[in-house]
Length: 177
Image (tube, rainbow, N blue to C red; front, top):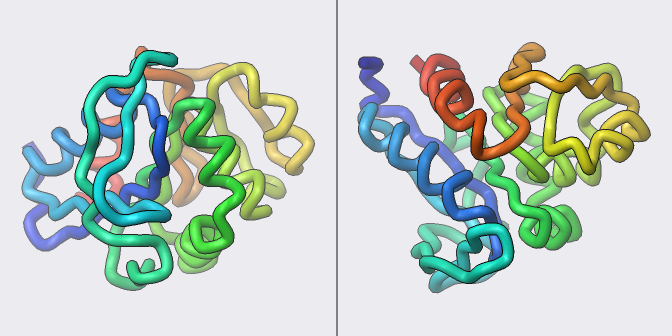
């Protein structure tokens, strides 16, 4: 197993995210020794969903605008259609993503999360995957959309859905090993 001691990971997410798209990568990263911070638009806790059913609440470690992208080695963007639709409207979330992409630092998105990448205008000429319902958004943003469990394009990693979490988690760990 990789040793990610000393590595810091930012998970940028809002309320109503798909539970396992946050909890599974966070567990894998922590098990490998990484420090993981959940970064959200507000403090306190954020609500998880299993599709549309509310499940657990997750503690927020830092608020957008307070967290500095320079402090992190990896950015993880969990999906869920409600979370993705909301977080893409947050200017501070778009700025966080732009900084990671500008600095060519590992950035990973799953399911509906590429909506934030679309709104941050960082996909021109890139190749990625997502949940199939947002493929038109990705193509309209100037990227190539493919239907694969994991797509790596430089610093950008993407997966389609919770069914791809095993390969997604392995890729994000490898990216900062």
